Amino acid sequence: MSALRPWSATVPPGKKVAYGGVVFDPKGRVLLREPRNHFDGYVWTFPKGRPDPGESPEATALRETFEETGVQATINRAIPGEFPGGTTINRYFLMSAPLESGAVPDNDPETQAIRWVTPAEAMRMIGMTTNALGRERDLNVLTSALAERAKNV
Image (cartoon, rainbow, N blue to C red; front, side, top):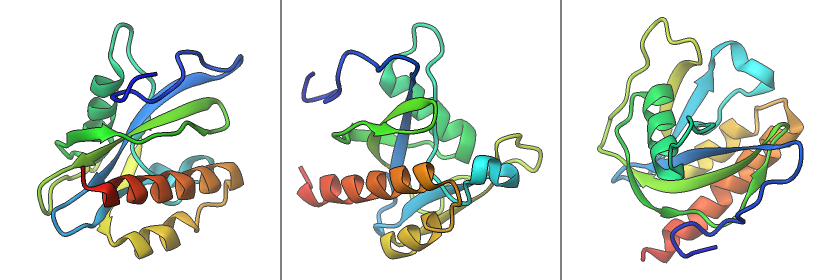
């Protein structure tokens, strides 16, 4: 583990690793994405995905954030903690982006909408997810991201 990547070097058996971003704008709003057809019970969640061969965690998180939201984000730092999902161990970066950035193409296969919302709205919207493991994970991710952002380091 390092300060830049505060995660274990190993991944539990049977799991893959995924990287994502929790993106804030200058007003302190957080970016959420609505998966197309509420895939796997997710109503609102964060952008994330698995790395391409040879791709760094940072590059994966930035690529997935752009692909799923249209937002060109900047990484501020890693969010400590690993957040288990059904098939993945998820690791996130705290990111920033310009006001009102992002757009989802009409034919995007993964995302049907994005929203910039307050942290309180994000808690409520994530709470709509019916996948219990995913809902708990995303609420933990948001709580950790808010704590890390509050450090303002």
